[in-house]
Length: 245
Length: 323
Ligand SMILES: Cc1cc2nc3c(=O)[nH]c(=O)nc-3n(C[C@H](O)[C@H](O)[C@H](O)COP(=O)(O)OP(=O)(O)OC[C@H]3O[C@@H](n4cnc5c(N)ncnc54)[C@H](O)[C@@H]3O)c2cc1C
Ligand SMILES: Nc1ncnc2c1ncn2[C@@H]1O[C@H](COP(=O)(O)O)[C@@H](O)[C@H]1O
Image 1: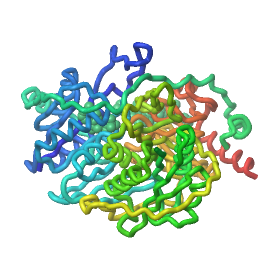
Image 2 (image 1 turned 30 degrees about the vertical axis):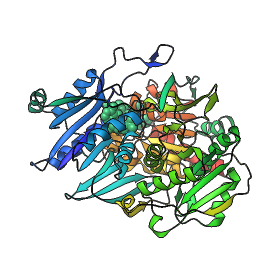
Image 3 (image 1 turned 120 degrees about the vertical axis):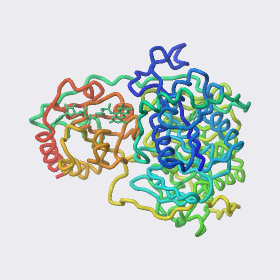
Image 4 (image 1 turned 180 degrees about the vertical axis):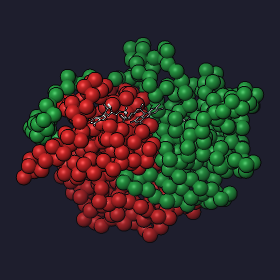
């Protein structure tokens, strides 16, 4: 079995988000970058499925050389080898196209992504890869079982879940619950340095979307405190002032 | 040129988020001086389809056949793209629901279109540019994104635009698309849905609780408060990690991002990762015994107090408010 896991390099979750150049660029000064938390789940699931010599896990990232530490982290967690497509990840369409083009040259049984990247939050890449490859894509999954040819997958829906059966190759985007995140051990960290990381060039494709400007949410006014003895005042305020109940 | 909106049905009915997507698409169509067509897939009765006219759809394409009664991502995407071509629609609107998130990217690739996921405002179309504001960095920021392609796909965040009535007489047409057999490699075996509960992503009101509640046995009062309000329940990450509550209730940077009209946070400290997913709520109420809890800094209303005393009083007050 061969599994491809797509990993994106994102700002650490504690990052206070600020912008530079007239709010046109994300300010990376002092920002720590990590493996997208959902991608860790996808990777952990892939490793779990391949345990005991049942298969190999390749991680792929579309990014420039500064993402190499993130890729090494994924190798330390337990991926067998890595591919970096050497280009700034312009938009989801571009990223998905690059990954799909690479996947066409290989024979992966499944491609796992995270549910979304915590920076641009598209939830786009996985389903776009599916469409470029003309294979099923299952978005936001919470459980995945695979018997070598058929996958049984729980997909999240509003207020519940759908159980889906997939035959043949597929793409899925993983949310919490799909697998317990694995933490790199010492052996993993040591071996990550020598595992293969192949760098390939990107293919050209027209740009379809471009961020022009960022905004941060407007600050809220000061909090109105209500005495704890009398919460009925809160109900009155929510009803009459805020008009939300 | 026209605008197409995909209307997702659940058990043959449309939810509020669908009417919201139709209202939003209608506003775009009006701006472009064109008509709005809706496409529905699955078994929906004519009276329900007609109701889309109330929000501005002048035509409804209805695809109903047994094979397509449940959501098949690939097949549905093929149908929506085919409908867009049949209607010469260059703008396709969907709601950014779980299903919409799976569909929109596929439709975008089929139409070679740029995609805005999680739009929060109407497009700003000026000087030949097509700009849409969307959430980014898990609710910590917005990105104003330009769509450069001829065709455009927009997935609208629930509760971002609101439902706007716009009485139009909708004509209903049967649409018979061609779907290929490989579009059915993934099929739905079972659907498990709690129908008695308000679902979190579309909820207008949300009651959420954190580690301050001490244990799962104390969620009775949270559910009672939610029931009285007609609200959905949510929780912080440690709470779902400890299995006090299901993962589907976990909000925040690594959970669901929500933007209800009212978010009540009880016994939640307000860590940056939690705030990321809830800070775009319109009104935030915080109940916490620690006056220094960071959550108070982003709250509109706050009660400093012990949840085990405050919440029961709040429930009583709400009961008498409702009479
Ligand atoms: C990579 C990463 C991703 C994360 N993603 C998320 C996420 O998506 N969502 C999320 O929520 N967290 C997330 N976190 C965790 C986050 O950092 C916090 O640890 C978490 O939000 C804290 O949850 P809490 O507020 O319930 O618990 P605590 O921080 O323990 O706070 C409990 C609060 O309850 C109050 N309290 C205690 N007793 C009472 C009482 N009797 N009455 C009233 N108040 C009381 C306390 O004063 C305190 O403020 C993430 C962390 C990391 C590292
Ligand atoms: N630059 C990238 N390189 C590789 N995979 C990516 C990249 N960006 C996003 N992905 C994958 O696509 C998923 C969804 O990302 P997004 O569509 O940006 O929300 C992520 O969880 C990753 O698995």
